[in-house]
Image 1 (cartoon, rainbow, N blue to C red):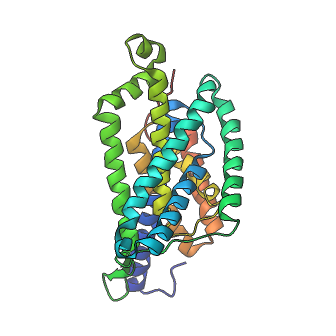
Image 2 (spheres, rainbow, N blue to C red; image 1 turned 135 degrees about the vertical axis):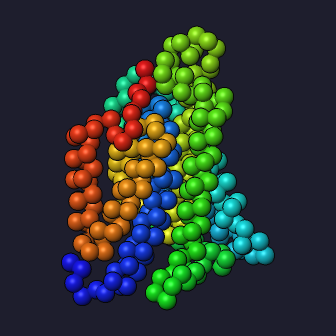
Image 3 (cartoon, helix red, strand yellow; image 1 turned 90 degrees about the vertical axis):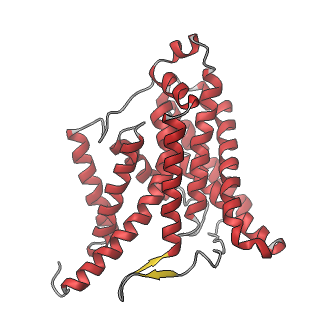
Length: 308
């Protein structure tokens, strides 16, 4: 497998593939964080999570066109505004979906799978009707374009660094929100014992709605970041939903540390194997490895807590 490569070439290959894995890790983390909140803390199997991500990507696309046409002088900062709008757009839609549909299904978690799968098809058709079936891309600000040379044979793309910094920042914000705030304590209290949480005065319905909305909002930010490395289409979210669920389940639903560790392990393994094997074979081997580990440790890398 490695014949024909010098030690220096092998080092450069592993360094570049490792960095590509870090970019994939960042996308996985941004997607999985929102799903870890919704699935891990609420027990909702949200098959439309990818469509909330794509809503964030389309919001970024619209903001990019708006700044390009009417505010060209401020085009360099549009992405930060787009991320905020993507969070609120996806979060608002998530809160509406929780009020209109999800709140009726908390005692039937498997039904949430079918309901959200139908929602994903509806959202895909809406995106197709509004934006067209063809994929669209955003214009990246000049300060994110290009790469930083590390050695003569290794260059690091700036947009990849930006996505990684964003993933670390969002992870830190989610950690503070879930484990260092009063709202996070309420969410975990409801997760452990809904009846008792309601008995002590916690507004469980509003907390559920906010939790679902924040999880969807984080997916919107992931979609905004996704525009830095790929094009956006009505069905693009479905390309990541299986990997995202795999990351959450493998890490242990509801565990922030487990989600990050799982995303790092899967992304690095997949990225390195893709260089030496086909992309589909790399996915198959990664999936088989994860399934084998889950057979030995069904609760994932970290203990999984279920909602009662």
